[in-house]
Amino acid sequence: MKAITTIMGIIAPAIALAASETAGTEDSGIFVWIFLGFFALIIVGQLVPAVMLITGLVKGITSKKEAKSETK
Image (cartoon, rainbow, N blue to C red; front, top):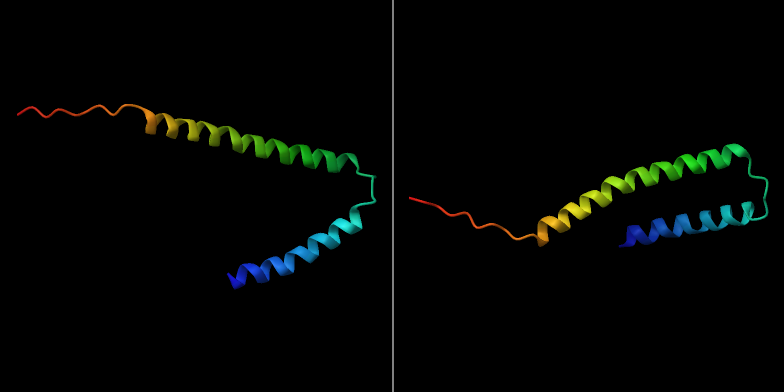
């Protein structure tokens, strides 16, 4: 728990400093938008298989289990 607190104490000021330095800039170039679009495509590409996996798990859990009958 102490390690997490230490890490958050180091990261939080860095994020606040970065946000304050870039808050006034409005000159995002085309390459920034291309990068963000590519990043969004990667995220969406990862979500599709995740949703398919979750729906398969839910169907597997909620479906009726067939009893196996042993004949001797």
